[in-house]
Length: 425
Image (cartoon, rainbow, N blue to C red):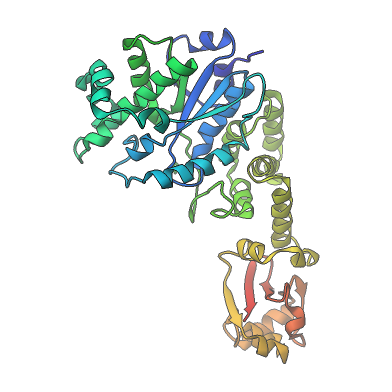
């Protein structure tokens, strides 16, 4: 049984625009709809997740999602939202990226179901044997230059320059829609609001080439409350690949969202039902200091992308960093230490120095420069604000290799928030 997909997008705050009667079309029964993904990297990032979740919601509403990985269009480059021409990848690199992207999409979409399974296609498969002359004869003649020039993605680049390669992109994407419409009965194309021009070129091409019904749906581009692009951190993109963005950092990204951003993200990036989501938002409004919304959101999306085991490890690491218990430090792997304390001041101390033992005052000053002077170190120790591996110490404390955690790290701390990582070498 199909659910109202357009309504689903509306209450989640995702819908930007759509062609007439698409809601009626989708309520008739299970339909096939697609979104294209650019395979110019071997991982998706949080910026892609709005479209991934659009397909996820589409499938949950009883429809058949199609993920198109653009092996051909990736060789051309989409000018939408771009100020300059992009570097293009060769076929081997694109194939590798496509396989990586498919594995990530399998975390969100059911490709093995019997009722409305997701499908993945590669537009290189239908473009590889098509000649240039065939394309301009059979496809290009149906769309006028005036029509193409009117698109915002083209007009915005006319002053800075637009190659014929990128100018032709909307025709290539339009033919994707036509091919899927003809061969897979795909009647809906979805994408971000910046894709409206490309998508409607597809619906127009289908109409002029005698295809079936075709509809367009676009979602709003997601920005943070401060107007910046959602999905970016200080280090750049937040990736779904654990090698690029660790599960701990991924979890922290969602946990650190502002109340406003978390409220939007909780509707878009989860499969929570409307009643549950609205109840959680109401609870958060009553007690925002508890940050329950951020915790629930971070837990859901981290589990979806990385699995429950990585979520538990990320929560444990967070508790260690922001809690007072020392027991959990030894449970962190070396990589987790580096992830958790990334950005924390660090210093290397020779293992020989630690083997013979060194006073806490010397470690705080001479060996690490965590504190600027021995006088400052003595005052801090007298105040009881210095901890070694989360345990408060006094000025009589000697630090040695027995304090090394995982045989490599010592965590110094002044007060609740000032950390310093010592690495034995």
